[in-house]
Image (tube, rainbow, N blue to C red; front, side):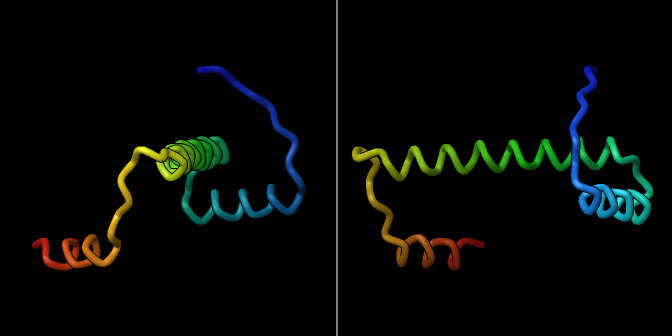
Length: 73
């Protein structure tokens, strides 16, 4: 595993320390999980934007999608 260094504002460090204490985890564990989730969300967002910009992708009928989701058990 490699190590990185980042400079963070004092307020962010205080929030990180409070969260670490509350969850009984290390700063590193929380930063690692937060970064992992951020990158996953960013990847999902990028894929979504690409699909929205794809003129060959069929349009969704949101009413039909909603109905299908509500009826699926």
